[in-house]
Length: 186
Image (cartoon, rainbow, N blue to C red; front, side, top):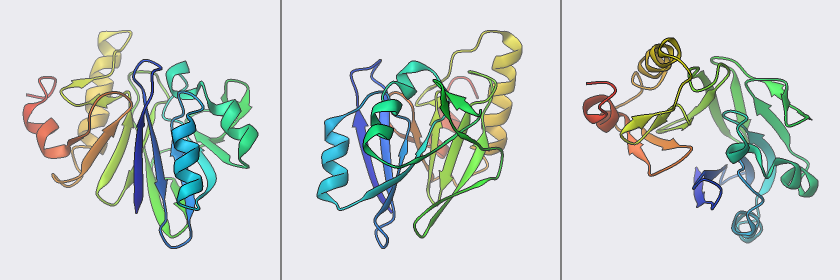
């Protein structure tokens, strides 16, 4: 799997590119802005962007979506059917996202917002704003916080301890580190 990370100036949000090394098909995960570095990476590696996966529709994860779609014929996947007025294919728990010869699996991670979703590929999980290194996403109520923690434990902490966690903001981590040292879970 080809994996690239781009830290943006939009709330220090992360953009990720996942691509299949055999087919050169690529997927963006969140798109805070139209980042020229991301475009250069796609071009340099001869990758065709065919999809954009949106973990949740806050502006710091969707701000560049319209510009990206203006340059690429890509399908949008999200937990709801419209992202900033752009049609999206709704994805739910265990739906598959195919990227060339790679297969991702959707995990529902509500709490930060009700329709937050993450994406699991072998050895990696993209958690949006549900789970960060050493923290969890902000919620609007205690009930939402409880739900967020429950879904993280059910859908992320059941992955292999060595699985890399790529959040919407901040550095990457692992399932082992977050299960054992994140203060929201100990």
